[in-house]
Length: 576
Ligand code: AMP
Image (cartoon, rainbow, N blue to C red; front, side, top):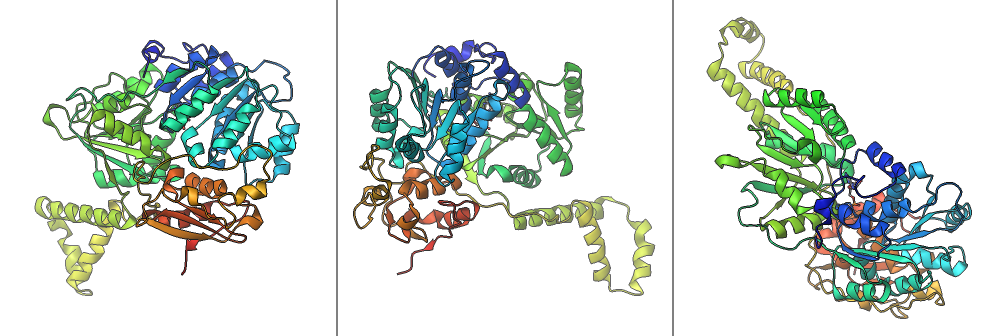
């Protein structure tokens, strides 16, 4: 970080947030601010513009959401919004809106997300009812501004979230136009995972004397990070509990600590893992010292094999027999990662560090690798077949041990009685079946989708796309913006040709599809980012989108979970 504010301020109370927000954070189970929050919140409350480099997973949403909410007047407020948050995709609009709503619950904050793909009438109604914070995708914000339905006269703060993604999706001129339509006196905040020169230019155009916050790029001291086997798994949020269960089944840790972000996550996960047959204990700051001591007693005595904890609760704990550290979420800063994994691999013992990352959090993992100078290998979540093999191995080992060590003579009469009726191998098979079921058997499991980690640097350049902007342009013209035949030449050089596969989407200009809708749907649902997507060609009735060959199946599968312009669209490989 560029200043040392993060070290000085440790609690949300220290950051100067009002009571309603502090109580919401306690209810959510947040124990302390993440580094980006500790550093940015005081500046934002003080009204400064801010240029922040932060990826998903660092806690950046709360960094801007809390100061926005902090300034809401208590009691009755006007109907026009005072804050506008611009985000690249509809998924992020929903996610940010949910977060602002949660944090602002005790303040009665009125939050409205506006994005393409939802009927505009519903959004008009919500805006008319009165709103404090609007979260919008740039295209839909422009639509509303042109209709005169998004009043901007009282906007005090504008946030550009994931600004690099928005530029990659071709929203540069929309952003300029929206910012120019807001009051000049506004506070402006720009968060971006990367800082290419076009982001710096955007910041120079619209931010005034901003505070700069960047994640440290220095490499850690040699030897600062311990030598442990480090791996990461990319897993969609909804599959994380099952994925962790499977990874633990295959890893069979003697004792592991699983780090979660919030108290709720700690409680939920320990329940899930107990349900899976693990002896898991929860440890977090909401528990009394006595309860914590009891938990630690059970962990040290070996009665519990998994300790599920928040960073705060696990601070200072030293557990000798630990073999595995699991990051259920990617830690919000590399320092926290180094600190966590330092609990294993001591004194020449074997240590394993496992990190679960959501598809959008790959950048955080890359950043950790850069800062620590150590490799984190991306692995595939064990499949049902892997799991079955592993369980078979366990059964085999259990039987072998029993054959070597146990006194089996007292079962001889049973076997001899059965041999009158059955073949000896059949009897053995029935016994193996029972033994296998006793060590867990083959529970019914659903397959977890395989998501390849995305490479942020593999594809093409990230230059701005030229596109018509401003409110004067007709939207229909905009969808065909890349030429009258709809060729998306401006994205064309992003993918190296050998890698690119064209997907046919049966939706086109007649459904008012814009490139941003396609990019948004793909980037929102898969591990691809806007810049991984190549040329887009939109014709009257269909669209062709270039994606990296490795991601074809992922994109086709992901479209089952979403809609484009309100329609379920099944893409396929282009046929020649
Ligand atoms: P973001 O980087 O904003 O996408 O946040 C990543 C995740 O961290 C979200 O699930 C948040 O709910 C969670 N989160 C944000 N700040 C904190 C915090 N201080 N303590 C615990 N969890 C947090």
